[in-house]
Amino acid sequence: MKPPAKRQLHIPRSLAQASDAYARYGAASQYFGGGTWIMRAYPREEHDARGYISLAGLRELRDISISSEVVSIVSSVTRAAIATGLHDVLDLRALAVAASRSANRTRLLPSKQAPPLSSLQRN
Image (cartoon, rainbow, N blue to C red; front, side, top):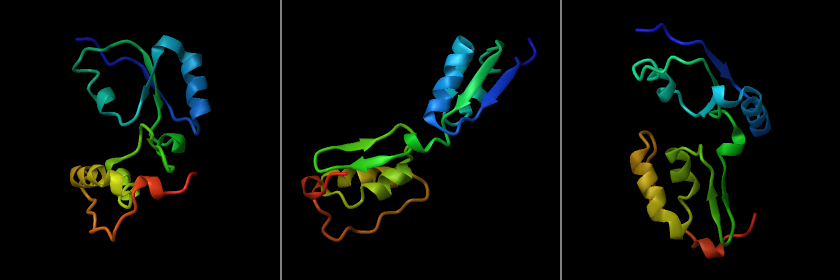
């Protein structure tokens, strides 16, 4: 069995810095959000040198924006954030409840006549 490969971790402060790191390290780099995949690299016998670029702390990837016509949920939004962020959007109440039930610590309280998506103002 080979020894573990050399790994580097890059923690950018913005999406632009993450993109720059990926361009700089090329095929030897990989974006990641949590870390479980990295922890399993050794059992998968991945022994090549690799640079990991963390996306976990990037605010740009944790936004929920709601307009009168569109709801945008970016890739790193947690289920707890979906549950609370969409709680008062009547058209998406089922999604909020499902996210609430799948997120360990989130519990939704009954809504007080949540407005439909079409009644919300644009951002």
